[in-house]
Picture 1 (tube, rainbow, N blue to C red):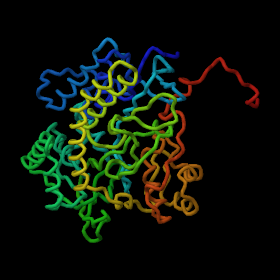
Picture 2 (picture 1 turned 30 degrees about the vertical axis):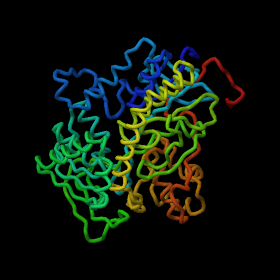
Picture 3 (picture 1 turned 120 degrees about the vertical axis):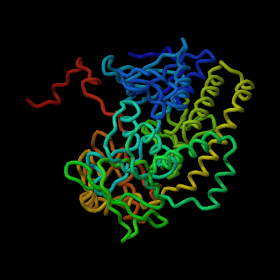
Length: 480
């Protein structure tokens, strides 16, 4: 089914996607918003699971209230909502999607906003595939939406605001976190001064940080700087974790190892942008490790340069991680620009309405840059695996099986072809950056010089029966 009734299609139902959708629709545009989750809100504003009733919304905190207000903006007659819908590919100006019941659908809009969000940064070390080793996002989903604690003794290892915020949030929800380690050193006076100079317009975030730290202190949960997880061990699931002090590049310092018992290891080392669709459209990229590596090049309206015949806008953490407030402001700006581009809003009115959002975006990004300097991700995070460590967990490919391949190539697609690393269900989301780092080290290059694997359709796994056309018969290709 080809649907051409929409002026705008928005892919992604997090803060950025919702803001772009509601803003554009408020000026009379017909908008479709698509998300692969069952509900809107994205990772930060995820709703409780099916079957749960909320008796006291105030008890869920300000993030829930903010998310509820944002999601309510989608209740407009000119907005069509498509949940549990996966985008498979974008061909010319057609967005091809799949739904488990309704099957394949094609959208043909006049403009497209891509707000795919981000996913937890995988960190590869011996034992990272053991049951009980989980990313912060996975643990948060269990605790926040299902009210399930993944264990009775949770060790949290990570870096940046995530290490403080997620560990405190988990504790508040009742999860038994007993220790937190942060890989970056304690912030220097110069970096603290830089943060203070950018706090204007970000007092809410500064207040959140103080409350998170207070939560850990009140529960007497130790928080140690300058340490990294180096190993997880156990029979059938994680039982012990080993962490060590790190040098300035986050390389573990021999002789500083500490072993502790734990039945859950929660990892929160930041996020990677989900930029598969941008790569498929041949968008331009920059590189910033602290924002998740490759970041989509765009102007302040979110407009990209791509191979598509319709304008493509990139907003939110899927374009480079900067947080939910920045993502929402990016969505508002894109919505205003699209309304102007399609003739529903004058340029003068667009510029007038955008001033507040541009100011907020600049303030939020300035604060984020200061934080990034405090918790800059170092290359030691990619040097934790040993020869027997599984690098590609989908295909069970170990480092020692990849090493001979990367001796003779810097091409990730070649490594994939010869070793099968990156061919699994996650489509290299878990292993690609680690392999790129291995290649960069072997060939004395920067990781930013190592290109991603060639993008392919479908960008997300789908059952072949959902996209196959049973009316087409090509017996000549089959041997009986």
